[in-house]
Image 1 (cartoon, rainbow, N blue to C red):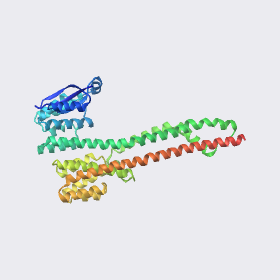
Image 2: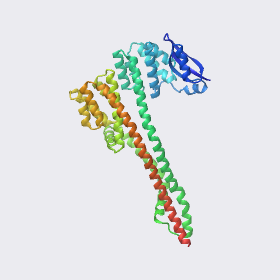
Image 3: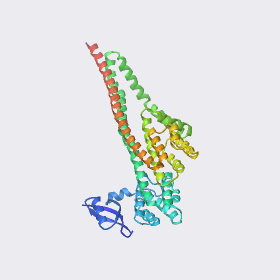
Image 4: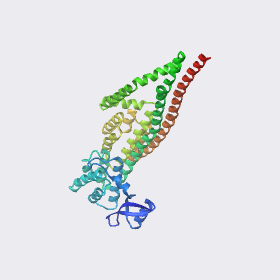
Length: 404
């Protein structure tokens, strides 16, 4: 049996918290449900949990995982009948760390003074994005804040899942590439030089390929650190340059034109735009406002310019899809579905359908990219190592000829 800490809402709306014994979290949840309580959180009890909960500082911003948890918990409390002020107070008091509690406490103080929740969230721009605030404002206007928060939590989880999928897919090729480069550098700088004294003692000339590799190894040993420092300086300079609108726009357009990477980026951008636009429209945000918010989540200047141009097109009554098609940034499938949505007055639902399609296409594109990168890096590493070993064997054979 293990011990678990739990937090739940009682049948009367009161907050229940404590420690209970059970084989797993599911058993604890069943025990609480039998008592008529709605589970908010269950976690292992004990010193390790307490130590992990400690945080330094108390006035920062919410991390993505914390934002999802806060959104989901607030939706649960409001759905159970709690008023907003009480829900925020309970969440601030029972926050997992001081930083989350401080953010929720500041929001609650504004809400208690009569400020709408969306306006209160605007005072914490590092924690709550324009998309988040826009959906909350729409939920308050429509009187459906609990369901809006539930859908918003789902949206945040999808975004986090997509970002995690992209990052996870690139980890293995990156490690493999670093290992390949490290192996070649080790052979050039540590292994090949060991054979130079043999040729010097026998008065033999090195074969041209071996001499070339030794020169390359000497260059890496002598100038490798300087090259790395130069690359670091260039990276910093490029980072500073990309903060300017012109270079950033040129770089983003260039990325979208790359053979394989460009197609993957287009799918990711299409999924982000469609998911955000669909969620905003379904929750009652006007199309122009939704486009203004959606461009913030794209992260690509070329795509943002395309959405801005589409917003101007909507203002003049020309429609969304034709302008996006003219920009040639997003996949054709997205444009077709948005055009169908405009024609049938179902733009929000069809945008969400397009998001599902492009998220799946992103997943498949990532799988194909990894399937191409891993064998390519392996073959290149094998070819490089084989070339070095062949050159070394050629040198040893030349020594054997001299000895005979």
